[in-house]
Amino acid sequence: MSSHVPLPGDFLPLAAGVAQPLAATPSPSYREHVWARLRADRRAMLSLAVIATLIIGALAGPWLWRVDPALQRLDEASRPPGPGRAALLVADPGPVAVPCTPGTPAGLTVCGTPHTAAVRLSWHPVAGADAYAVYRHELAPRDREDLGVPLGEVVVPAFEDRLGLEARNYHYSVVPLRAGLEAGAAITLRVEPRQAITWSAALRRGLLATSAGHERIGSELRLPAHPLGTDYLGRDLLARIIHGARTSLFIGIAAPLLFVLAGLLYGGLAGYLGGRIDNAMMRLADFVVALPFLLFMILFKVAFGIRPGESGVVPMLLAMVLLGWPASARLVRGQVMAIRDEPYVQAARLMGAGTPYLVLRHMVPNVLGVLLVALSFAIPGAIFTEAFLSFIGLGVAPPTPSWGSLCNDGIRSMLAHPHELAVPAAFISITVLAFNLLGDGLRDALDTRAESP
Image (tube, rainbow, N blue to C red):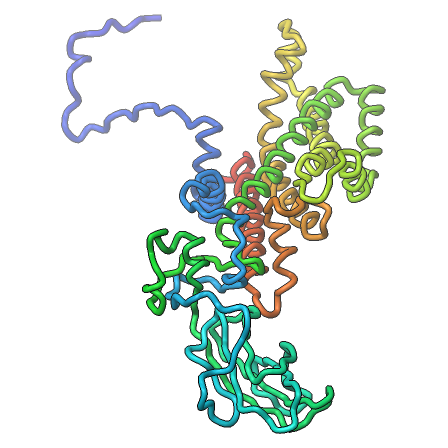
C-alpha cells in the first residue's frame, strides 16, 4: 500500500469555477428543534403571548392601575365600560322635600335642574286628597297597573327622589289618595336627570381640594374613568379583574405544578420498581381517583374553619393537589416502564450506573416533554375548576376577588347590566383557550415523528 505525501501544490486555492466542498454544519439539538417547531405554530405563539401578558398584568397591574378593588361607590354602581364622564357639581340634598316656590303650575313639574343626586318633584294640590303616592318607571306607563316602582306616600305636594338614579329617562307618576284610596287620575311626567355628584361626595373622593368652597356648585367635574365598568356596588371592574387574576392564575398554575411534580415522583418510583410495589402503588392511585372532589372540598373548608370573609384559597389548593396527582402519576409510570427496558438504559446499567444516575440522566429528561404537555392542559382545567367552585360558593369567598367570584356577582344583574358577567367570563374563556392552544402546539413540537419545519 502506497501512501501519498502532500506536496506544496496541494494547498493552493482552487481555480475559479471549481466546486467548493461543503462545510459540515452541526445538527440542531432537540431543544432547538422543539423551539423551531413551536415558533412555526402561529396559534401557539399567539397563545404564549396572551398568557405572558396576563401573567405580567396580574403582577404589575396593581402598580399601573392604582384603584382599590374593594372601594365601593354606590353612586357609580353598575356603570358600563367607558372613559371618564363629566358630572354636575351640586349641593347636598336637604333632609325634607318641600314644594317649589309659589306659582307652581297645575300638574306635575320638576323643581330646578334634575340630576342623578336628586330629582325634586312638585305638583298642584288636588282638592280632597290627604296624601299622594309617587311612582317611577323607566318606560312610559300604559295604564294604572303599570306605573312602575312605588317610591312612597307623602302628605305634601312635593317629593325628592334619591333612589339609585342614572342619567337616563324616567317617568314619574303621582296618584292622589283619600283615606288610602285613589282620589283621582295619575299625573305622569317624563324626566331625564343629568349626571351629577354632590359637593360632599366630590370632596370625599378627592375631586375637590379641601379649600374649595360651595361657590363651585353648578360647574362640571370630570369623574374617574372605568375602562371595564363597575359592579353592583360601584367597585372598579378593571381593578377587581387584575386582583382576581392573581388569585385565579395562582391557583391555576400552582396546583397543577404541585400535583404534576407529585405525580412525577410517585409514578416514576412505581414504574422503575415495578412488580408488587408498582401494583400496590397503582391501586392507591385508583382509590384516590374514585374520591369525590366536591365532597372533599367541603370537608377541607370545614376542617380549616373557613368563615365568611376569608378567602378559602388554601383548602381549594390542597384539595386539587391531593386529588389531582393520579393522572400524571399514571402517565409517568407508563413512560418510565417503556424507557427502563431501552438498550441505552441497559448499557448504562451494565457500565455500572446507579439508580440515581439512571433516573436523573435517562428517565426524567425523557418524561419531561410529556409532563410539560400534560401541565399545559392541566392549568386551564384548574382555572376552570376554581372558577366553577367560586361561582357556586365553594371556592374563593368575597371580599377576595377571583374571576369565578366575579362571575357569581355578575349573575345577579346579568339582564340589566351584562358587562358585570361578560367581562370576567371573557377573561376565563381567553385564558383557558390560550393554554389549550399552547398545549396543542407543545404536543406537536415535542412529537419527534413529525417532519421538521
